[in-house]
Image 1 (cartoon, rainbow, N blue to C red):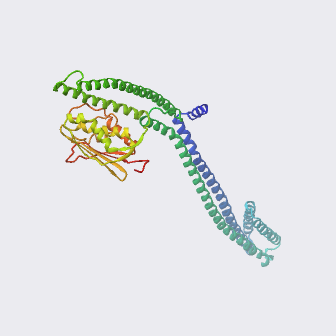
Image 2 (image 1 turned 90 degrees about the horizontal axis):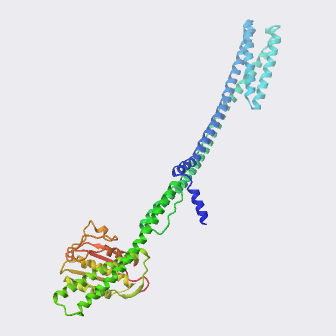
Image 3 (image 1 turned 90 degrees about the vertical axis):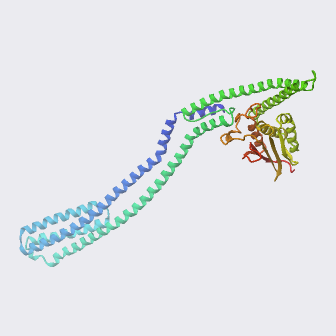
Length: 492
C-alpha cells in the first residue's frame, strides 16, 4: 500500500505547475478546435454544394434562354432568306444553328436529369429533321418551303420555352432546398457548439479541480500547523514544484513538532521543579505562622502574611501553566458529577480570604441554590481564574460582585469588579493565550496571561460562552457574563 501511494505521488509529481497548466490548456482547447474545424469543413462543404447547385441551375436557365433565342433567330433568318434570297441570311442561319447545337450539347453534358436529357434529344431530332428539309428544298427553291414546314420552328420554340420555364422553376426549388439545408446545417453547428462548449467547461472544471487541489492542500496544511498542531504529517501530491513545497512544509512541521515537544517537556519539568520549593515555602510559612519556632511579633506576622499571599499567587501561576499545557497537549476529558455550584463559589472565596483581608476587599454575592451536572475541577478552575483576575484588578477597599442564577435549564453567572476595566483596544485579545493587558495599579504579581484562555477552553468543553459586559455605575471595572447548560445528561 505504501509503495502504491509512493508510486501514485511520483506519477502526480511529474512536471511543473507551468507544464500542468499548459497541458490542461491544450486538452481543454481540443473540443473547441474540433468544433471550429468541423464548422469550417461543414460550411465549406455547404458553400461548395450551393455554388455548384446554383451554377448548374443558372447555367441551365441561361442556356435554355439562349436556346430559345437561337431558335427565334434561325426562324427569322430562314423566312428572310426565303423572301430576299440573300446568301448572307442563310449563312447567319447556319451560324445560329451551330450555336443552337452547342447549347444543346452543353446542356446534355451538365444535366443529370433524364427527363431534361430526353426532351433535349427530342428538340435536337426535331430541329435536325427541319434542317434537313431546309437544306433539301433550298437547293431547288426556297419558295417551296410551306408554312407546315416552318411551323416546326413554333413547335421547337414551344419546347424551348417549356424548358426555360422548368429551369426557372428549378432555380426556386434549388433555392428552397439550399435554405432548408442551411437551416439543418445551422442546427448541426449549434449542437456541435453546445457539445464543444459543454465539454470544454467540463474539462476546464476537472483541470481546475486537479490543479487547485494541491494548492488547497498546501493552504490546509499551513492552517493545520496554526490551528491543529504539528502531529499530522504533510504530503502534497501534484506538480513537481508544489510537491517540493510540501516536502519543505513537512520538514518545517517536523522541526516545529520537535520544538513543541521540547517546550512541553520544559514546562512540565520547570512546573514540577517549582512545585517542590513552593510546597516547602508554604509549609515553612505555616509553621512560622503557628509559632512553632517561637512567638512572633506583629511585624513578623505581617511579613509571614505577605509570604503566604506571594505563595498563593505563585501557586496559581504554576497551576495555570500546567492546566494550559494539559489542554493543548491532550484532548479535554470531562469528569461529570452532580454538585451545588453555589457551594463551589463559597469554597473558592474561602481560598482567597487571606488576599481579600489583606486588601480589605468585600464580596457582594447574590447566589441561589443551584445544582449542576458538570466537571467539578474544571468549573473550579474557571471560577478561580475569574475571581483571582477580579481580585488582582480591584482597588484597596473595593467590592467584587458575584451573581449566580438558573434560567431555562441554563446556569448564568456574572462577576464584576471596580477596577479600571478593559479598554476597547485590548478587548479582542484578552482571551488569547499568554496575552497580558496593562498591569494593575494596585500591586500584586503580574499574571501569566493564561487565566482567561483556560476559562474559554473549559467553558467550550461544557458548551458554554463568556462575554465582556460594559461597565456600570456600581462596577467600573471588568464585568464578565458566563452561561452554560445546567446538565447534558440529567434531568435536574
